[in-house]
Length: 199
View (cartoon, rainbow, N blue to C red):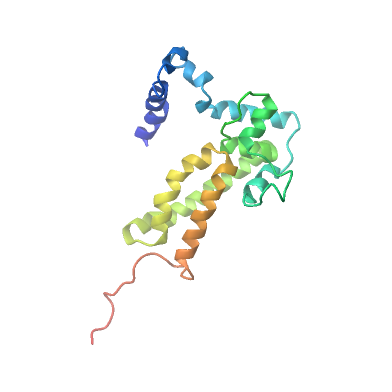
């Protein structure tokens, strides 16, 4: 975990500065990277979403509905919500809209501060329940070991957002887990043959 934090805060910015030839000429310094580079937009997008809520622009659950119904084409749903990152970029009048929308921002544009509290309590309860089943599964095998191998890594994408971009892959993952689990709700590992009677 510490290595991941160091990578995100230190290694990635340095590598990003040298990604293209001549790119270092536009960089004022290490800390300015966080202020001007859209790769580090999370803090500002959360602030933008708070302003969006304060300005009374929130339509409850509209952005969430667009994420849940990600598979509906815009040809059928003409006013389908855009990506929350794009929504906030348009709201602030940015000249670029390829921005993230962290989970905090998603909750804010769907219901304000109360939604943030509810979403993160629900997320904490859900992840705690998942951990309870995942930890023993690493020793015994089973479906929850697969979930424990995939979801923690994917949480980086989910928390960074935006939700519309992340929902498709998440739904495929959930569907796949349900498919391989089948009807066996007590999937905790391979069958125990040690108690079978000898012939």
